[in-house]
Length: 310
Image 1 (cartoon, rainbow, N blue to C red):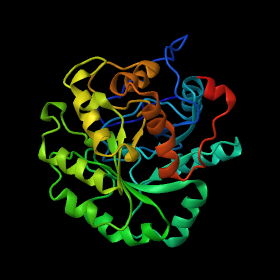
Image 2 (cartoon, rainbow, N blue to C red):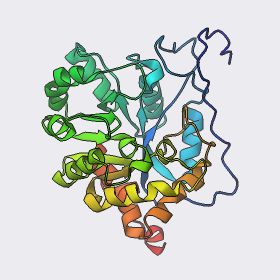
Image 3 (cartoon, helix red, strand yellow):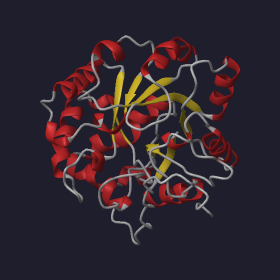
Image 4 (cartoon, helix red, strand yellow):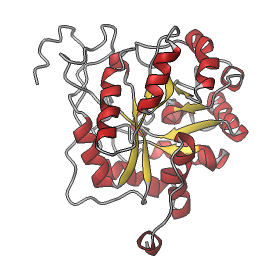
């Protein structure tokens, strides 16, 4: 694949590490990866002019290999900022999943004036949410969300927010007033040094307690001040979120970990962090499996005898 035609002098994302053999950790049976990205050939899927970085070329086949190795049953493909409003790669990937008999879901980025027909088409492909990304360039702004919210509610979609909760003003009033469920990416994307006492993080915990807001335990390397696993400064944030409402917490890999400022983690070691954060098996099963099935509308998981034996 030739990426040399990309003329902008932008940071180049590092590709993910190859899967280790053997894996040191597998997800509980029926787990769902609630946050991963795909990046395709830029000739077929052009990158947005106002992007922040150039991604590494990793696509659906690599993602499915990673999920198979870790034991994830389903995944949620998140539209990355480098494609702006162009959801073609997301849609083609969801269609490919369907053709392979895989039930994957998607979160898109759409314009405020998107037609109902296009919302219906996206829904049929498995899209169930819209992403508000205020960290990286490209995509919706808050005023667009306000315009879209009622229409998203009619399609039973949710709003996914990549925001820094330490700087997002009036968060409880703004997010709490929306007619759709809200999902917060990456634990609120604040510096771990701010701690659970940060006013914005405390507001996020209050929203969780109200029961309509969800949060993803994902991308701890985006919060940490420690360059390597296990990102121990993030632990207090994780435990505070789970304590606020364990029924509204889910997990995502953030694969292929695009544009991060720390050493590239190994997939199984990154997932294994949940055992450090949450030593109780029942809580891990809830967050890896049962909660995301409610959020994304999957059928409840039924344990087999083999699953019960573990």
